[in-house]
Image 1 (tube, rainbow, N blue to C red):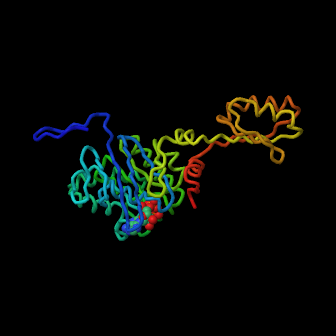
Image 2 (image 1 turned 90 degrees about the horizontal axis):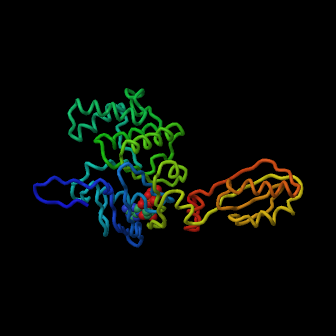
Image 3 (image 1 turned 135 degrees about the vertical axis):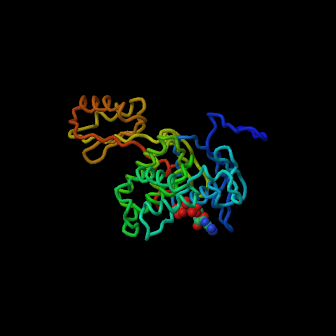
Length: 326
Ligand SMILES: Nc1ncnc2c1ncn2[C@@H]1O[C@H](COP(=O)(O)OP(=O)(O)OP(=O)(O)O)[C@@H](O)[C@H]1O
């Protein structure tokens, strides 16, 4: 991290993370809502906090955004320590909360212009930035409509646009797709991908594993206030040793083949189901030809084949003993 000397310009090293949260704790009465959460996010990286309702995601990001004072722990964003009682460093952060903060009687454009004026932007800059933001959130063609007529998803997209107005380096999104229509959901995911591709760091909370898998370069799995595992989707899956599941429909006997299939290196388990054989293996597609050869050699005919890769849902279950969407 760059050191500060009076009168010098602070230049962060290129490789410094944009966000560093270290050992955050927060307790509400008897509940330890956040219990030693640390994470770092690089510029251009999308970091996902994946966990069920009540896991502590909102509490953690509220501390990272400087809205909530941690009991202990520190947050640094773009080289500045974030403190709830100071506005220092806030310009680097765009927080999009779950609750909407838009004026229903104003159009999308008017809402953006209003919030831009709160940031102290000139009318000209505000107009130019509103144009850019409307493109990013996919509402350019609906910009003049009163937002009271918008769908819930469109309102949510405008909420994201407001968080983007001041061109933050870190965008924090708290479960932005909960309860939105599929079209808006897709628009939101595409916006996040575009922003991240443009170099913005994104902190994204969700309990939808498909979104975490699609968007996030790294994921922290959070449960009961603790990040119980962190890594890329592949790292998380391999860490818990989950296997691919290969299901092959067969006619004829598999008795002769099944012993040979179990002997294939990398095959963990092979069993029969109704008119099918199910093989658990570390890399299902790689073992498929050998499995099929044994079946055919044993006199069985092979029908449809399905390879199911393990997902974050399985990882979550493995780590916590709970389903992500209980
Ligand atoms: N201000 C508060 N006072 C008391 N308890 C709180 C407060 N804020 C959150 N909690 C509790 O802390 C726990 C974590 O809540 P948090 O909102 O951070 O979880 P979450 O993962 O964001 O889930 P959700 O999506 O349901 O908000 C929950 O049990 C919640 O009830």
